[in-house]
Amino acid sequence: MSSSSKLIDEEKENCSYASKLVEYNVSRLKIVRLEKRQGEPLGATICRLSDDDYRISIARIIHGSISQGLFSVGDQLLEINNIPIQSEYRTLDDIVQLIDSLYGTISFLLLPTSDKINDGIHNQAFHLNQGLHLIIF
Image (cartoon, rainbow, N blue to C red):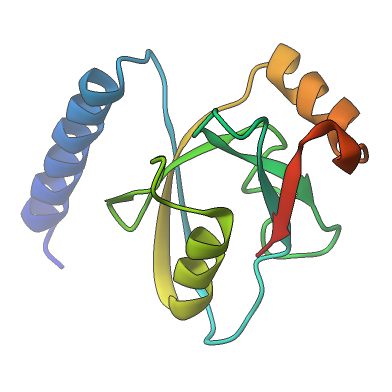
């Protein structure tokens, strides 16, 4: 790849990032790209905090998994490979099946956690009777 092609790609990515900030009405986003082999688990759990809240967050990360160091507990999943995932029509099982079906380079768009969100999810992660739904992917 020539240096001019690389600059064009970076400029295109910066414009895309800026448009996502506007689209989601946030001041910061996190993009995680990773290489996943077919059938390889990412080693994390996802959750919704309640049945009427369609935000999907990282609930736990398994030590030593490919997710460790890339995701943080409390990060909200917004898109996977440019596919919006926060919807009342998408179940956690749908999202896990999507992730399981993908391999090669996978891109995640996340709303990074704040310490307050992180603590809230961490404290609830082991109390499934409080309405928290956990699914491993």
